[in-house]
Amino acid sequence: MNIVIIDYGAGNTKSVQFACHRLGFSPVLSNDKDVIRLADKVIFPGVGQASNAMQMLKKSGLDSVIPTLTQPVLGICLGMQLLCNTTEEGHTQGLGVFDVAVKRFSNTLKVPQMGWNTIFSLESNLFLGLKNDAYMYLVHSYYAEICEHTISQTNYGLNYSSALKRDNFYGVQFHPEKSSTEGAQILNNFLTL
Amino acid sequence: MLTKRIIPCLDIKDGRTVKGVNFINLIDAGDPVVLAKEYAEKGADELVFLDISATLEGRKTTLEMVLKVAEQVNIPFTVGGGISSIKDVDSLLKSGADKVSINSSAIKRPELINELSAKFGSQCVVVAIDAKQIDGQWMVHLAGGSIPTELNLFNWAKEVEMRGAGEILFTSMDHDGTKDGFANEALSRLSTELHIPIIASGGAGTIQHFVDTFQIGKSDAALAASVFHFGEIKIHELKENLRKNNINVRL
Image 1 (tube, helix red, strand yellow):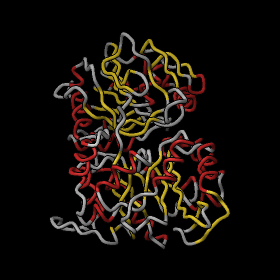
Image 2 (image 1 turned 90 degrees about the vertical axis):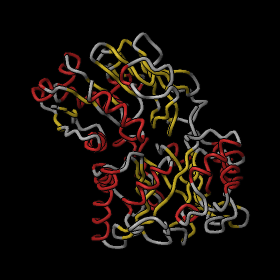
Image 3 (image 1 turned 30 degrees about the horizontal axis):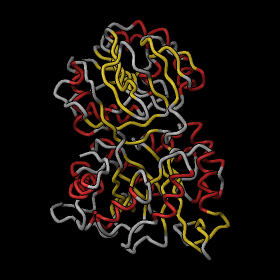
């Protein structure tokens, strides 16, 4: 199987790549439009600041490619947020795959949320074999609201979307590549869809 | 609900674990990768590697170690020790470290915190602060705690947050090595006055100390070395006890 991790300069691509290796898959890193279009599965990671990451996507022309992909796509962390309509971080316009806004956590909370939290209300084959309230590792200051695309929720001050799905697009706010065996299960579920 | 984190800390020199690691069942307790995997399987939430290599060659070896840990370990880890530039951080993150921890270099040039959080994001910038009480005042110390500075712990912690740190790792030198409990009064004040997570370090000796630092010290995470390395406290047992005390942990 031909798995591509989008490498646009804003992501801990190494960790995602290693996590795939541990599951017996050999993904390639690429920012080449044709390589990405021809992949069987596409992983869209991202860490850092939203507007910078968006700029890098635009620079490589990937902002127009990603929303048109037809194979399964998995956005991770900032990757998921960039697939949404807008994010308050740097007042950034997203790729608009998920029809939802990304907002900043309340100042009454410690921000970033950093550590292990549970995911619940699981509603996708992405979570096959997982129990409700499985623990995932999260590091983020912004969150996607609950919406029609929500397939899992997490609570930090309020309930928000910790995973989204629309057609062939999946997005997870947590880091499956760093979330122990349960995270590996989710990654494996995606790669064997 | 977000859980409280338990973080074993490993000292690394020239790519090898040093100082008092005494796991009975391991073939090579000096191999950080073996230890890291063991801790991940036993329920550690994160790991911290503190590089105490003195030479450039030693640091290169550590970089190779980071790559191997990232290859094999499925929980997040932080690397600290001797990091003073964007280039240092870039190499560590590219090798698969999730976060870096800076200490002396941030005191010498506080702008480094701004630069790192702008380039890599706050989420990967941990600022470590070593402090001890002098005449009733918590004073920040440099170089592993050997050189006192003019900085007050609480003022410095607030500055660090303002400059973009994502987390603070506070080690009380008055408590470190005593196995007499964490510096909960100072920790609680840090946790109340700041809006980023605080990791407690220094003083872990018993399970009750962990209960106290979460309940009284309001810490978000607790870091320890020897109690874990010598098997005096088993992580699973610790977490079961924390849960019995209504402290939310990942089990």
